Length: 335
Image 1 (tube, one colour):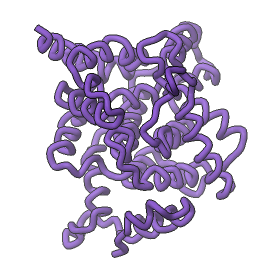
Image 2 (cartoon, one colour):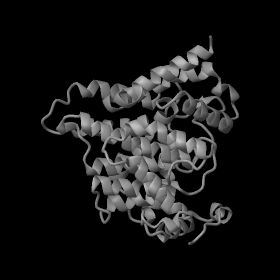
Image 3 (cartoon, helix red, strand yellow):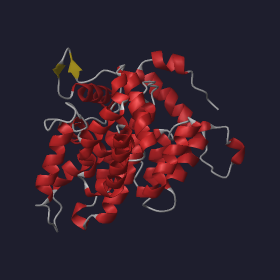
């Protein structure tokens, strides 16, 4: 088996990183029955991903248990390639289609080592896993004209893989001035550069994936001017007019953005008090702002920024009850 030299990979140009990552990921034969290969982390990841998906289209009840298991054994969620390969099979996506090829490239870009405490590789994986939960739930509870199709799903998963690509631990505030979309634009600049090299970049990608990524900007936190809050408002205003039976493409565009921005927040605010506490500590360490992890700050986040998580009906179905119980937990800590 090819073993990556992460110190060398971190210093290499991205095209070399992608080549090495591709060889590493393609080494394993994804035989779940081959127990002798248990020491192979790729096979382990495939098995772990399969466990998360389970046999039912709606695996939401297993999610908290799954993340708790990841937290305790310290190995984190399965890698993006493993998750997406499972998704491709479940949603019957065509791997020869250019959009799906771009999605697989996005999984490899998202696995380029990033050791930030919060905005590192485990975060990208969590967001993709949560996006899959939301996609499944959305399609189960939505009318036919609002269901996500294969192209929608491919676009959502691609955006989720690369929404924080190349994050360097900075924020959208520089010298006290808020610069909207600063980090998101940085990620899309990297995506454009390397998607272009492989022939995947175009106006459709820029308008689709780019707009989804820009909608994940939650700054300024708790303010109605934040792109996440604006996207939620647009969704609420348009949702009442999407009555079918024809598909409303403009509405579905905002639905896709809502799926990813909800997934971006869900692990921090929609699973359990322990997971919320862990995510808060990771962000506090990354920003060197210990106050972020205090119960008062967490409660403020849950009562403001995290509210966009329950605007989409699927988000409400999956996370509303848990968000309330988590908020109650931290409120009790304040006495």
